Length: 78
Image 1 (cartoon, rainbow, N blue to C red):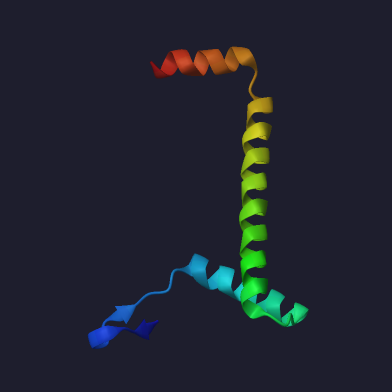
Image 2 (cartoon, rainbow, N blue to C red):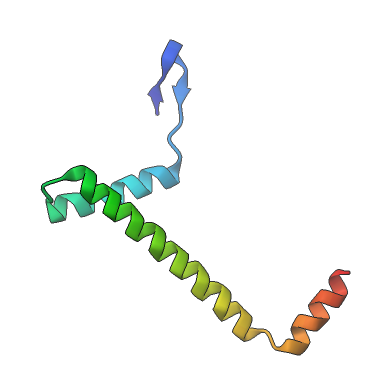
């Protein structure tokens, strides 16, 4: 935790700490010449990986539900 303007405390979210730590480790291992270009590429790849993961999770969930179960679930919800 650190202090902001007028001594107010600023809480850094755990997810932000984790993402920045992973980025920092990757940067230190790769040691690229341009930190900004590397960061831009790193975060684009991270976003794409998360999007792909979400798509596969949704597709996997859709495959595990039979059409009959899907119809029943919709009818119960109404």
